[in-house]
Image 1 (cartoon, rainbow over the protein chains, first blue to last red):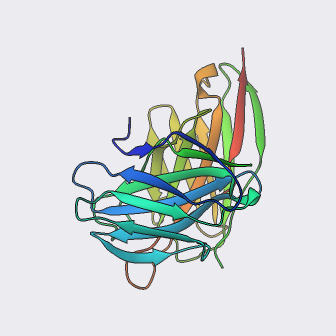
Image 2 (image 1 turned 120 degrees about the vertical axis):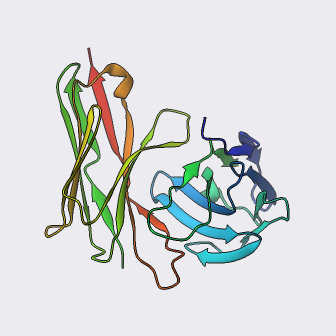
Image 3 (image 1 turned 135 degrees about the vertical axis):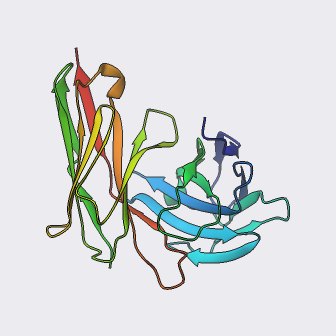
Length: 115
Length: 114
């Protein structure tokens, strides 16, 4: 158990809909990362937050947004969903998000299926 | 841009050694990681190596790094059926602000047969 929790575990929705994925980092970690894992694209970094502020952006679509709240939990919002958004979405956390030696710990993921 | 390549599949017999290979392109990579993903689970950090090291050993795991060729390998000694999983190589670049992110390979599926 990494200490990172994600809810829900599974989500089934329809095209055009909007969903929110939630992540709670490990106790004491200030930085949260979101990743998307799909069969064709592999594991892609989406976005990183540190202590409530956006720090790095990867291959995140404009239809997607995220935020980190004062209690350090984070939410990833996916809107106008398309079939291709079906994937496993992972959250990871690390202590501060700085320094190359810092380790990211991954949550169990949320499996999203868009029908 | 950054790119990490791995072979997609490896099959070994229980008790044999497994070697999973990875190549990366970012010459500024500072740390390289190996993660394990079991079916239906998240990624579990196995080990990592700093780019100025050639080798790191951790129990049954040995990581070898050839920085000149940008080649990383993970050797699992005495492979067990419980080692069957997908193994991801990842690199972390230096970045400009220090908030560098991980770039993952597509994963190598290791199948261990009894």
